[in-house]
Length: 206
Image 1 (tube, rainbow, N blue to C red):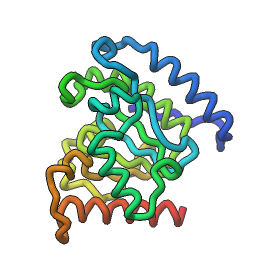
Image 2: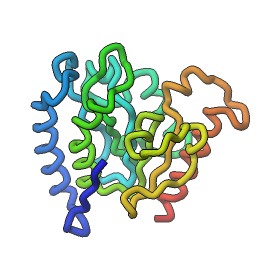
Image 3: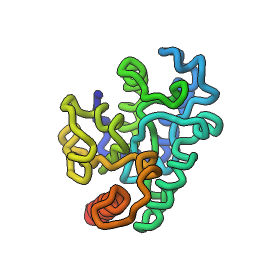
């Protein structure tokens, strides 16, 4: 994953909007891998380009493919619920993307080649948005930024330095939380809420 910091210290909202609009046009026309021929819509992003936090998920599912918006299915609704419960406004506080812009058939994990085909688009989104924090949502997003074979259960909740200047934290993917309903101390749902609170506290102080 490449990250090339913009020469400008700060990109205005107008510059960000124009740059992302141009990038989206390129993404919509992309045919770099076979996923482009099987998806209904390219799923570019959701949320606020001026947010301090970028959340990166795995790949679009059926609901996302139909709507063109990331995290709108059952897992996405659970994510939105968790964000709200810890005091975040999803639309205001986050810019949300995936490692790939097209839905893999049967919701399988995107291949390394498919992620590579989308990596320049993801890098460009990071460069334009200039987030202070990146939330790596699930194992696939984590692996896209690390050459080490971390288990999400081992690394989640810990701060990671990306590109020397961006703080990142991995959290459980909400699809995993859909299969784990317990709210007991130390459960995946409990740990995820604590991770989100830790992220919120960091952003508020920085």
